[in-house]
Every structure is written in C-alpha cells, then in structure tokens.
Image (cartoon, rainbow, N blue to C red):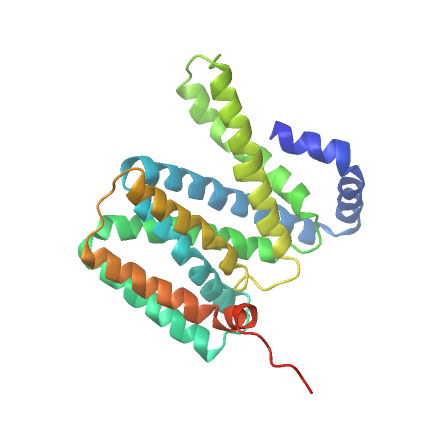
Length: 258
C-alpha cells in the first residue's frame, strides 16, 4: 500500500486528480455502483490471495498452478455470461475440453480440484468486475483496492498480533514481492483490460502456472501420477485451442503478397 501510493503521488498525480474530478461529475447512483464494485473486487482479490497462499502451503503447489491454468477459461466464460462478450465456436470447444480436464482431475483428488477451481473463480470474478470499470485509472483503482484490503485484514492482524520482524532479509523479500510480484503484474493485467477483451488476456497468465508446475515437480519434488499428467495435458490442449487464432498469428508466417 505504501509503495503504490508513493508511486502515484510522485509520478501519477495528474491521473489521480483526473479521477477525483471525474468522480465529482457523476451522480450518487453511479458513485454508489463504483463503490460497490470497488468493495466487491477487493473482497474477491483478498480471498484469492488467501486461498492461493493457503493452497501453496497446505494443499499442493500443483493445485495452485492448476488454478491459474483454469482462471482465464473461467474469466472468458464469465465474460460471456455476465458481460455478453462474444465467444467463437472454437473457444466453446476449448471450454468443453477444460471442463473434461477438471472432471478427470476431480476423480483423482477432489480436494485439490476444489481448491483450484475456487482460487480461479475468485480471480476470474475480480477480473470481470475490473473489466466494467473503464473510466478510472487502473493504478488508482488498484491503490484503493489494496488500501481496502489492508483495512479488511487489519482486524485479523490485531487479533493475532506478533512482534514486528526486524530482520532486513524479511523486509527485502517483502519489498520484492510487493513491487515485482504483486503491484506490477496486477497493474499490467488491469491495464491490459482497457483495450482487449478479458478472454484474450489469458494467454499471458499461462506463464505463471507453467513456472509453478516446473518448480513443484523439480524443486519441491511433488508427486505427479499418470492420471494427473493426462488431466494437465487435456487442459494444455484446451489452452492451445482457446488461443489458437492468436498462436497461429504469432507462429505461422503470413504469406507474402505478390
């Protein structure tokens, strides 16, 4: 929260002033809707953080990684249902394959797949709400949401208060996590929603679970049986099918016109 507000006040003050001026021009009904969206998105974001951290530490890193493979697909489906965004027949086929993958994984470990789908659904709902907030600067929105998140978590911290860490290594890690692994990725994902449909944003998110799967298997020695491998391969096929048009444009060279 401290870092993001420092960045805004030092480098993006004009965007903050512009948003304040915009909020002064809207009526009470519109303002109430923005407040409700802001609070709802913050709750979904905080719950997503908590469930993800809990899954990594108490379920498995694979379940957390699987969540972010499923997330863009759920976001696309949610965008179709709630925002009336169009989906092609190919993307519907992709969603069907992903659903089969989830069902297959659930037959092996219902607990893991429940956590995966829950984490993914929370973040998908967060992104869908963000997609509808187009008139406000994304970094300002994120700053307000992180401030609300701090206020939401503060009672839990006070009720379970412990000594403030004094180790410089701890604060170094916190700084790196806050800046490079939380604020910057969240801002980039929200900024991308300005110009592209929420369904298209998914291709970038897949870098996260691919790294997480690699770390889980090679570093933490988590076991992966053939049943899981097949389920993950199905989901990977779903990802390729869903993003086929984009991938085709990237990897297949266009013929030169005479």
